[in-house]
Image (tube, rainbow, N blue to C red; front, side, top):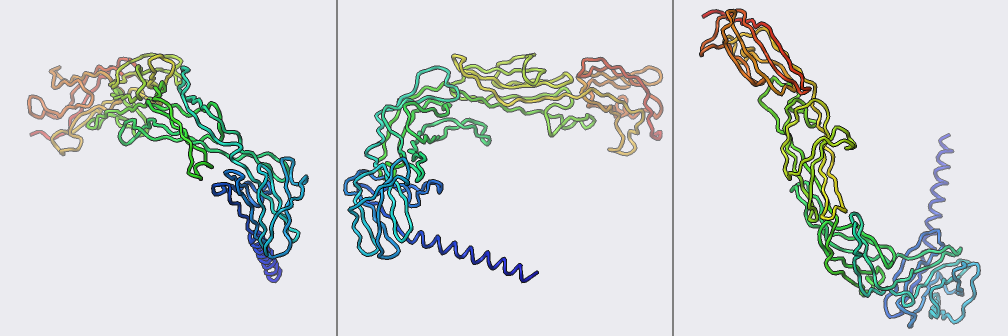
Length: 447
């Protein structure tokens, strides 16, 4: 069994090595296109085109040549084909061979050439750029309203497609790659601000009108290209006048204020969501781009905002959530004509169910820091009053905030151990009133 495995692996290695040798021989031949007034632009097409020699763009036919360096000095022949494919090629005469090098003066472009030697064929396509030049006379912006997402640029000029064909006659085109550059605004999380950034978009082909993402600030647009002219250092450039944007952007933040000292309050500092125990105070801040003229905070009890329960226009909004349940909040911004709107992310505020419980025993003055203060346990309590009495009905203590408590003192001195009574009147985030009555056992030795 091990011998068979070794033999299979060796066979794979030999096949791989043979492939490397074959590929090496293929690329030992070299095709060079020169002349035409500028260095030829070389494009490597998809393998499926069969154009093993590549696609070349020449500036013009003026003194343009194709030079083929063969593997030896055996005869080299040439053929020409057009868009119907290499099967319909015709012989070409006039090539000059000197040893293993054959040179052909290019008399026709926008066609394909076949070079043959020793039974091997090499295919390439020549494009004459002078027949399909890019011309950019001017560029302007469309004045149509509502260009909230995309802005239309109008190009005055021309630039036909740079077409070539596979050896089977399949149409292809070389991308011109026009570059559109302009300024816009980008949200910066670090600085909590919109900052100006340089933007570029690539258009693969020339068109009398093109669309780019709408800028979020006033800017001008510059169109340059194409990639062939860039290669020759002859880029065409055209710019618009200043474009007054109507597109807008809006970002919002929400920051909750937490009651850090209310240690007897449940869910007072949720980490995964906003809200928790009511009352929950949240600061909303609006950040908008240049063209925004109106903002509005929308509050809804529906996630799709099909029912709006409140609206506010403050740039910075402090809001206290007191009602149990889920509230959705988002910022809506619009421009002066209300043709463009932008929405912030939606904030979900979840206020939990009210809870109020009172202990019935504590031991003030015995072990400092351990059960030495009488406090209720609570959640989502929006109003609170508590009275504590002794058995004769004398009020020992009163407080009106559930995060407070009784230290077991009356007029600065610890009360005697025994039974005391509390009465609580409160209201929860569900708007229901709560009444609690009960006794408190104070455990401590008498002084």
